[in-house]
Amino acid sequence: MTIGIASDHGGFAIKTALIPFLQDLGHEVRDLGCDSEDSVNYPDFADKLCLAMRDGLFECGILLCGTGLGMSMVANRYRHIRAALCHDAFTARLSREHNNANVLCLGGRVLGLELAQDIVAVWLATEFAGGRHQNRINLFC
Image 1 (spheres, helix red, strand yellow):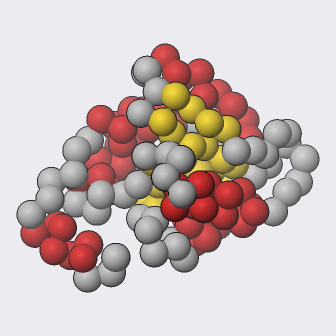
Image 2 (spheres, rainbow, N blue to C red):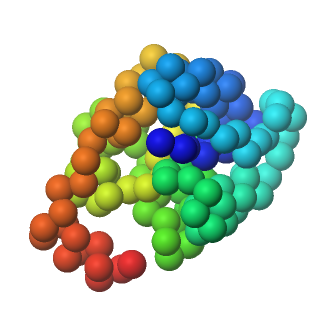
Image 3 (cartoon, rainbow, N blue to C red):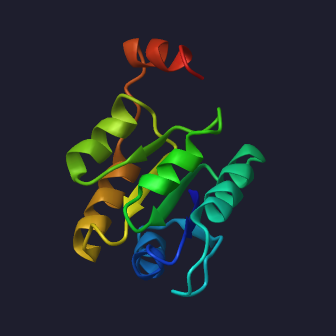
């Protein structure tokens, strides 16, 4: 699967560490920035990923900022995006199973790398359940 990933300065360290982890899982990863821990504006990078997904460049995306909150707020402005801010494997699993989330948001200053990797692995491995959950998604997408 091709995965887009982007962060601001607050998520840069974990984003950088997640890229080889995702590649080891067999995914192609496209890094949309940022490129350092120098301060940047998170909406610029969330927009970049969401617009690339609109254009069909990625099947799903991962966004990171300090808390994940800002990235999730920006991403969910887009009608084709269902971004989920996850803090554990349980919310990651349900965000895919029940909500068919196509963007995972993580907090670089909230999570350690091991937990972030666990969340990402569960999120990517979980299939959408469909059925009654699709009916609910249809109400807002």
